[in-house]
Amino acid sequence: MTLSNKLSDPRLFRQYAYVDGKWTHGDGGREEAVFDPATGETLGHIPWLEPHQITEAVDAAEAAFVHWRALRADERCERLLAWYDLLQANREDLALIMTLEQGKPLPDARGEVEYGASFVRWFAEEGKRTFGETIPSHIPNAALGTIKEPVGIAALITPWNFPLAMITRKAAAAMAAGCPVIVKPAGETPFSALALAELAERAGIPAGVFNVVLGEPPEVSRILCAEDRVKALSFTGSTRVGRLLLEQCANTVKRVSLELGGNAPFIVGPDMDPREAAFAAVAAKFQTAGQDCLAADRILVHESIHDEFVEHFAERMAALTVGNGLENEVDLGPLIHRQAVEKAAAIVDDAISKGATLVAGDQTQAPGENFFMPVLLTGVTHDMKIWHEESFAPVAGITAYADDDQVIEMANDTEYGLAAYIYTHDIRRIWKILRALEFGMVSVNSVKMTGPPVPFGGVKHSGLGREGGVTGIDEYLETKYYCLGALGSVSGS
Ligand SMILES: NC(=O)c1ccc[n+]([C@@H]2O[C@H](COP(=O)([O-])OP(=O)(O)OC[C@H]3O[C@@H](n4cnc5c(N)ncnc54)[C@H](O)[C@@H]3O)[C@@H](O)[C@H]2O)c1
Ligand SMILES: N[C@@H](CC=O)C(=O)O
Image (tube, rainbow, N blue to C red; front, side, top):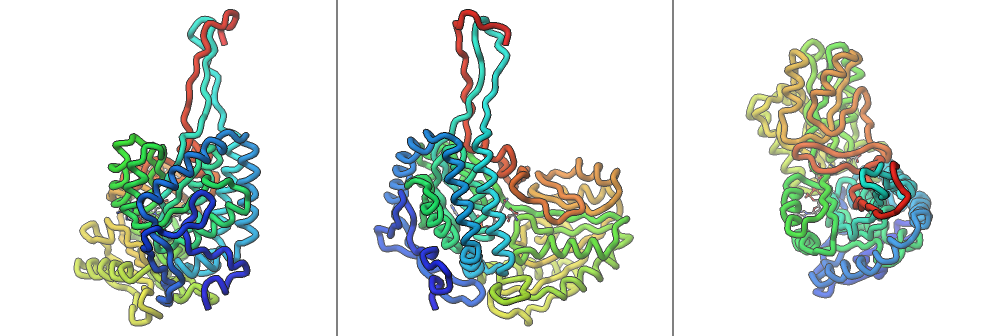
């Protein structure tokens, strides 16, 4: 049974790129297979576009920009809201496509469709509030102010772990601002992006405003980064690739937004109920099978409650079910591919060889070759890979600490600075640690921290800029200052 036969609406499964409102083959005949990570089955194929076809996508976006930017904000809002409605109406099919290509459990995929759609609604509305300002004039008889204008064509390069929401968080902001977009999704999860394109077309988004290009990643990125007509690049993915793209954008002096890797500390204070904190830590570590930029990678527990915390963590972890995301009651799906499993195993081996204790995690129980059973390590230290690298796998590492100063130093001991968690009810401790943490986002006593109203993003090597919130749209806007001089009677305001 092919993927399209499993959908209520088979037209949501597309095996073409989408450029200028047309479904497009690769002119050179190159293509790539896409696999279900749970079963290894081939789900379908996508074309790799040739370099001239990427340039054609830029041509299409350039032409579309003229009309899209000229629409009133409320007209763009209506079309984006129509897109939002279609995402909601097709939630089951979108979730199924996502589970099949990404592996996450179906309920999580449904949650991501909701999450992804919520950015479309948010930015549809925010597009009506791209206010300029009036500046009290210091120049006689002049009026000064600013106008916000769309930056131009935006290239959006996205990862496989959140195949839909990482696109909408960028695309909706850009499109609401009046910018056409060229999306380059991860090759592992292109079908969610292509379903978004199908629904954008049905929503009345004009040809050339939402394009999806597919191809050899470095080739496509080099063209988009070198293209002077592309004015903004927004990338979500690894810090390694983010650095490369930043360099490649230097020549054309693009606006660059980077949402990169994380290595979140999860700090547990001595006053916490160890069971409550352990259950929260399990939730923060194992969502999306640990393949989450917000995953609690370094769990730092006060020494006075460490042993009890570990017991509860192990108990909760043992209750997690690993399996095909299509099956009921599955908590963790597969990792995205075999290399991810190998990387996870190497990180665990490295930690054990350097003195960490393996509390739980038996890989002989894995239900398939891309699966990795949850692992719990204690005694994790600074010299281990797990301390510095994103495992992007269900591997939890716990370390005991003695006092607040020590835990702050431990938490900040990473090149990353995306998200951090603090669990304690002591308000003085919360404030001290929150202010000292070098992270873009700090969540206190809550695993959930994201959503459309919040400015999502990191500091240090975790990125540049913010997505979502009231500032997310600014990544796609230029500020034009004006001075209207010689107005005669105007003065003083
Ligand atoms: N900060 C955030 O909001 C956020 C959100 C999700 C994922 N991430 C990060 O993404 C990473 C996991 O995703 P990934 O493995 O898809 O990342 P990745 O960097 O390997 O790939 C991301 C995108 O870049 C493309 N790409 C890969 N190699 C490239 C190259 N050499 N040149 C140009 N493009 C290239 C890929 O095809 C994909 O579209 C993790 O580090 C995770 O923390 C961050
Ligand atoms: N979980 C993040 C995406 C990172 O992988 C989010 O909520 O946006």
